[in-house]
Image (cartoon, rainbow, N blue to C red; front, side, top):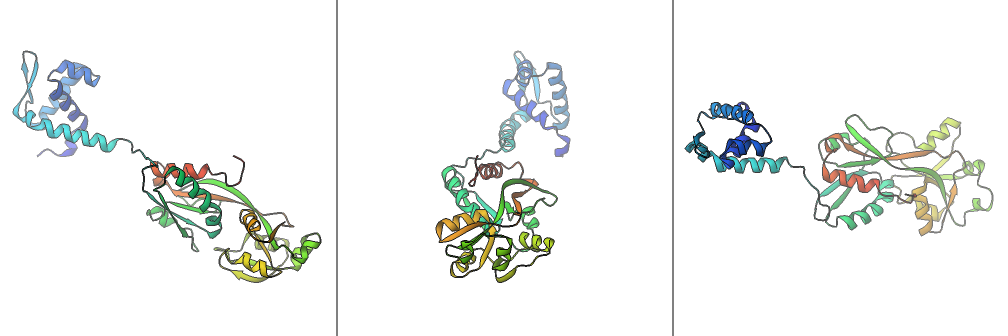
Amino acid sequence: MTRLPDIDLNLLVVLDTLLKERNVTQAAISLGTTQSTLSSALARLRKVIGDPLFVRAPRGITPTPRALAIEKPLHDTLAKLLDVLQPVEFDPSASNRIFVFAATDYLQFVMAGPLMRRVQELAPRVQIVIQPISHHFPWEELANGELDFVLAGYSQPPEGLQSRLLFKDEVVCLLRKDHPSLRRPFDQEAYLALSHIEVQALVGPTLVNQQMATLGLDRHISLTVPHFLSAPFAVLETDLCFTLARRIAEPLAAAFPLEVVPYPFESPSFQVRQFWHLRMQDDPSHRWLRGVMAGLTLGEES
């Protein structure tokens, strides 16, 4: 029995061409090779298959019964193989692909609207599923395909992941419109005199708390919440100060009677990156959505 490792697939292409042309010269021209190279390949085919395959004829070569029996299945198999090996094309307008993200609620707030507006324009049947990030970076979920992307503020990806910078953000303060502190300069002393709302960090201290610790300062946290959603409503009802990313603060201030105030210390800036697993680097659908996300200006000048 002939084992597959004994067969050079190029020899099968030669055989398919010889069966089509029934002429060594024409087959060599079709394959872009010489007659001597083709004759050598035919000799190898005869040895592998155990049959002469062709005999000389007045106008070329005539296939043996064994070659004729091989002809159609060989041609069909090669056609299927070539089809399988063709680069996969992705048509977003016809795709119903489901992409799964993990993101903090901050990034869901910032990204979901602009991303879906663009996706619906280009790929109306594509679905986006966003899951919350837990207390660990979901490396395994990216590796095993449960997640397509992670959107997070990590500066460096774990080994085996690729990343792309999406945008940068900075810290500002949010107060209610009629807050007493807005009647005078909002300086460091005024900031530290207030009580504050804090969104619980997933891992370690927040950027602001890190800065306070470095400066040897302390701010009074009156309310800690697990998500951004509840914090602005507490600000509306109290004199609490909410320190948060500008990209959340400005839309909230536009929608509610809230005021965005510059953070009175050097504002900690941070990067938001898109992470994906290396194995998805060349996937056409994945590459398409990465490009869509990179093209979102998210309020920045393009």
